[in-house]
Image (cartoon, rainbow, N blue to C red; front, side):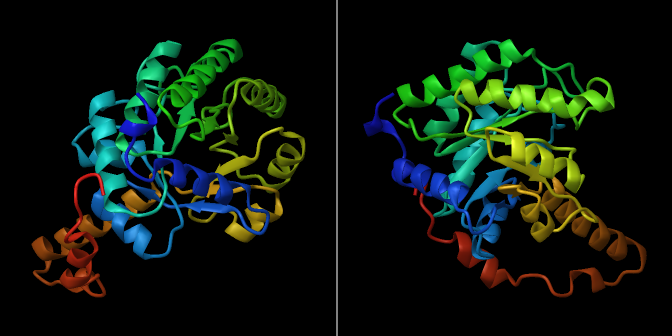
Length: 288
């Protein structure tokens, strides 16, 4: 694939995403979208960039998370999301839809063609583990970097996710060293940042951010540290994972339960009006 076949603005959006990620004044905040409508709402709220959530995308297609969708279906969802907004989109490509470096390369080519300018690639060989070895994941990251360049988007931002903490891999006292070992290898393989879901202990995050060769991304959760607290610990990128999709589905469940139970509609109060929502997407063109 050459630059001529890339969606319009890909190089510009890649540069924008990199600039946002490199800013020193505040961490990059990435609300996670699961379809074109959610992406449009998030952009209208003021997001400078949008990440996808594999869980939300899968649920919206009637599948479970954990590569419940195949590469083509996920890339098509990314295409719809990227076409719905005028801000950079980074795609959650889970484990790359296959274990081999070429699987990852094919996935990167697919989402770059769909309009994504960043990817999130995890080192879990399967949901819950085990993890790919450091050497295996490094090869997969190198394949992602090479595929992006060959696709005409060398500026693709590669966020390397490690699930050491999320899945409790290995003895607890050895996990910080294992994450740092992986951070060093992933940086050498061409990753641009490190995502460590499951780690929200501020003292541990401060130690990691001070030692990591890559800027650190954390996944915020309700009741967890605030953006300000995470930023003070050195975190440079904050996302929400499936939380926004969960909140949206919870709102739908609550309203349906009320309708079917009491026959009232209080849960619908305060919703964005039809005209506002329709206006966010009316007139959008495929590939815009």
